[in-house]
Length: 483
Ligand code: NAP
Picture 1 (cartoon, rainbow, N blue to C red):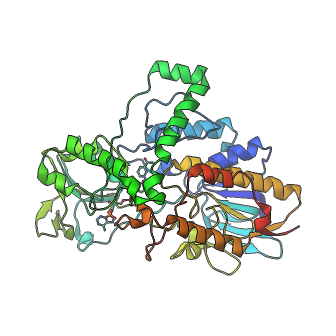
Picture 2 (cartoon, protein in one colour):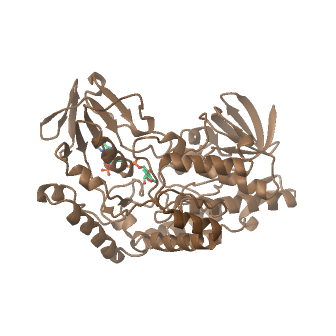
Picture 3 (cartoon, rainbow, N blue to C red):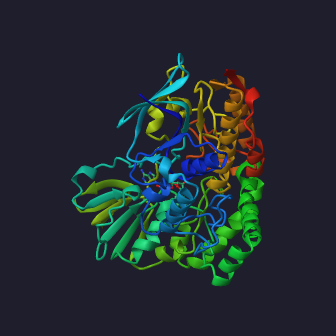
């Protein structure tokens, strides 16, 4: 059977960044398994019209691979994918990737202290397994009455049908999250009519996108410190969303004022404005940066329906008030399932899968390790994502931790390491204690930020700089080890 010292699952921001930093540390015996035929993760799979980053690009990139050439304040999907390709090439990571290779199961073998991994291309073993599969991998599509008889096209934003021409069509978009808010302005220019089915209005704050001038690009290229300063400024601005998010709901007011201002400036029709006014606190679900969304909804050929969906017919959708909307195509912008598929196949020493451990009251330590899953690290595991910071910033913390861990384990000849249960319990208690007073939990909405009991389901409830400090070094004392 093939043996690989380090197996990384996923070639997105996590896998590529980890590969780059491992190589920088002189560690080259790793293999990256990627189920699709391309690298990029989220940024190769989500190709819907309008797909772009909602964090300024200067911050939505690795600190060790700045990009002075970003064309816009917020890069588009294609530009981010190109950036990831460049980083993977420049740091020599691409050659470590095996595409079209999906992990079906992984079980820890106590006798050899290795992971026994089964993929669609056969079996292999690994001393260390790292999952870097991201949180949003499987499309969530609601089962609506009559879906099976719909005569037009239907697809989820994750599986955008680029051969499908929407010009002249009546298109329904279901959902108004971050994805829908990018899709709707893009397709309203093409389709004849767009009907938006909104369940909960999002808080929208100004995006203020713009192109980066040649002068700025030249400056960033010749004087990298200037781009670092820009990055630090944006970091601080975005970090401030943590104030209402996890510290105290009282801090929400200035942020809500920004959202109300955007709504008042961009939507003059009182009826539409009322439909779009959230009745929960900002930050309860992810606030969205957009300058194009409200203007798109104000168009005569765009309708916002807030009455829900009662049934789908062959060529229409009937809303909860009984009004029938004729549509040719339905776009599901309804988000993702809470658990990635691979999480069902990775089993810990007590036989429970990663998804079992993440369900209900998730167990994890810093989103990077889980007790009962020896010799395994996770990137963006539960409580390792920030609700108020660039995901890439948090990923880099996890990468530092893992690289430091692998170096330490190798230096000491450790063959098995497993997080101590008491360390995990203390961390999970800390998470729930720290989450209590902010809008994530107290904001009066239902969101994937919380579980069925209204507890934090996966966000790190403290400042991201504190998180980076905690993940700077692998803390061996927190693990049970065997040499
Ligand atoms: P999402 O945030 O989960 O939003 C899903 C939307 O679908 C919500 O409006 C939800 O309404 C609605 N919905 C779900 N089921 C429904 C049903 N049965 N009937 C009617 N409406 C339904 O998903 P997303 O917008 O795809 O975003 C997923 C993640 O990707 C988020 O974390 C987002 O921030 C991230 N994202 C990031 C970027 C970026 O630029 N970096 C871009 C896009 C997305 P409710 O609110 O009522 O549940």
